[in-house]
Image 1 (cartoon, rainbow, N blue to C red):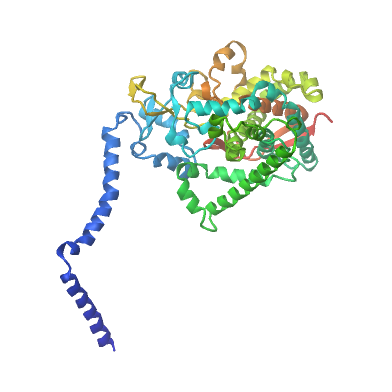
Image 2: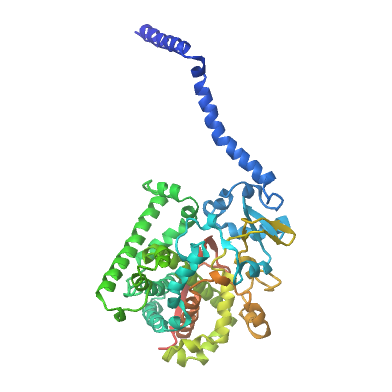
Amino acid sequence: MESNDTTSFTLSISERGQIWQWLPQPLQASWTLIAFTAFAAVLLPAVTTGVYRLYFHPLRNVPGPKLAALTNFYAFYWNWIRDEGYSKRFGALHKYYNSPIIRIGPNSVHTNQPEYFDVIFKVGSKWKKSDSFYKYFNGLDAMIDPAQYRTYRSHLAPLYAQRAVNDLAPKLHKDLLSSAAKMEGHIKTGEAVNMVKVLRTLSTSMILHNLYSHDISLIEYDGYHPFLEAFEQLMTQSWLFVSYPLPAMLLGLIPGTSFAKFNASFTTFMKYCKDWNDEDMRIQKLAEDQELRDSHMKRYLAMDSNDSAKDKVVPNPLEDIFNFVAGGSDTTSYTLACAFFYILSSPEIYANLVKELDENAPFIRDTFDYIKIQNLSYLNAVIKETLRISVPVPGCLPRIVPEGGTTLGSVHLPAGTAVSISQQSVSFHEKIFPSAEKFIPERWLGNEAQRLDKWNVAFSRGPRQCIGTSLAYLELRCVLAYFLSRFEMALTGNCGDRLRWVDRFVAVNLDDVEIELLRDRWN
């Protein structure tokens, strides 16, 4: 039996050999040729591109990591695989290469010279946003074309103008009262309050108030709202979806993985968004125009169908909600959490701030007068110092060198080069901010204040300055004034003497800022 099997196998091989011999000579070599061609098709372009980027690219003489010059995957490695943030390495790279300009990507450079912030971000700047960086973002902040950006921004601008923001103070006060009522229970139990969750709930509530004309109850929810839990999970994978969206979607199909958890969170997030969106559209169609407060949705539905410029540019609020929550609420709540940490870490700063708040208690406790709250000098100094040291948007915001090229220092950069100057480079520049690693609100007071205000760049500058700047300041001032006036509190938990954070396009704290409420100073 074994002999027959062997013979059969031998004949099979023999037959195959005979068939192979009858094939034309070119066809015999075809498999080898196919394998070689496939290998060359993949390898040759990669080698050619690599050689060009290292030895012939216009940026070849700009110092920086060779891997960064070869591929953008180097940035992805630090942003997502290491989950630390590429931007956190820039300072060390500038020191290592002893250069104010370093190459951080195949066609990207970073400079740590603050004077170029004025050049790039000034009013009337011709430096456009980098399409290669923002191509997978959506919404207002990702718009490359200046005309389209102006159209969309002007459509929303009245909602974020100073007068409109001032009118939001009663809404914020109501939310603060609700939050404080929930926090009071912790005084009796001694249970720590997770301020990150409290503050994210407050900030997101304010953004949703502007997005939609009906009230969305996040603060009254018993516990931490599932919408916010889902959003937190989405932020953990932000760089993956920004850099490689298709592979990210495919990975999400694998059950039992963190990517599948991301998909579930995305489903939850979008379900809430769609439900709120649909409900607001239903209400808008039934109500008289004057009955509903102004909002993104109200403005979207009121657009003139003959206004082709707006029709092409302004999206349904559903399409831009993630960007407004991430950029408008997460950055503010992150900054507030940092503020509580730094204030409570310094007994002297805490005492000085509470003293100022107590001296102005009537318009914090009784009338809640934002016009007066916004003029408290030490409170404003604390906020500016928090924005400086926390850097809510820490990484690259690349702009493209306009036609004709430019020269930064002794380095000529051709048109089309992506140039970044991170806010960290400004905020931690020792010549501008001596002892930059220390939290010193007093630096924003007295004779130095006017000079330093130029370098308060947390909301960027120029034509692309954050549309929500005034709203953010409303929240920063009022939340700190209210909670620090009302409650005596102390830090607890395991934060240490410095908050750990990562760059997920916006800064995200790795440590929860937990506080112990010692007493209600108003009762």
